[in-house]
Length: 121
Image (cartoon, rainbow, N blue to C red; front, side, top):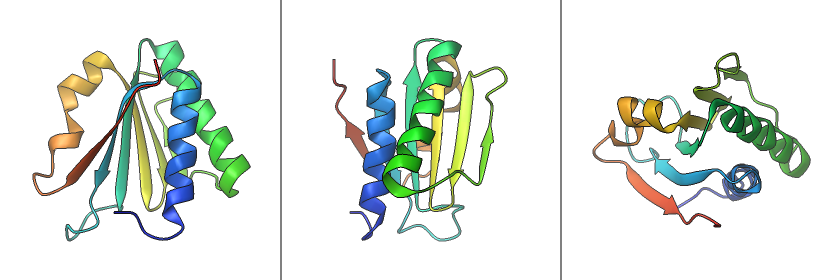
């Protein structure tokens, strides 16, 4: 499912989300779809804007520690209801529930393969 070398980055992102009790993690594989902006979306949610912010900080920390990666861009930290982190081939989206349900981005591409990551509760 994943490209060589991408595994470590995806694992680091998931670890960062799970480390701060993020939940409902979904990996959206866009690799077989033409003209997409990236290869994978990682989508997760937190229970509040404060948790969404903490999740984004944790993802950034794990990506730096484990992969030496820094995001090309981060948007949404001001209100932290939807934070997007661009790691080129992987874009991380962290939402509060209401924003995630409204935008429903994991279902924008009908042909995308979705992989749900179990919560660590």
